[in-house]
Length: 155
Image (cartoon, rainbow, N blue to C red; front, top):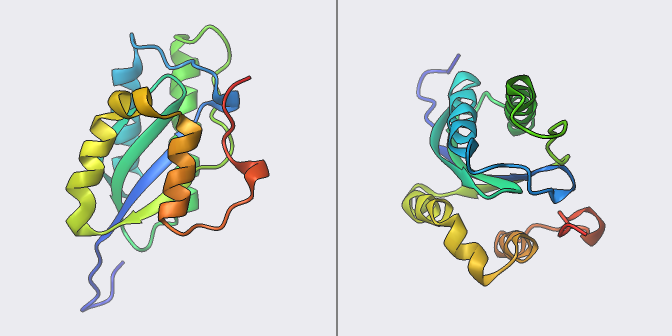
């Protein structure tokens, strides 16, 4: 429910990773997964703009209503998408997302740039690792962080 004369425009760039950063997202079903995540974003009060990623992590650009908690939204997206993967039996082991996520605000004037950035994930990762990318985003957005809790590269 919205109050009269209440307007909003909330865009986010969200990133989350496979547990232990294992490369479990297979090219054979990743497009289906991206579609499922997009549908879950829409069903849970958001608006899907783009979902893309690699075998070990996902990027999403979405909009949210102000009445929706980012934490609640992400919990639903992650738990229901991992349930879909496990129910489909498409992964060789039990699939789980790593705890946590990054959520960065995006101004309307930058949505197209974020869309293109997410669309071209494969190209970006030829140049730098996921960890480097993630640290760069944290620093760019002036987010205080503890190195102990950053998504680590797989061992």
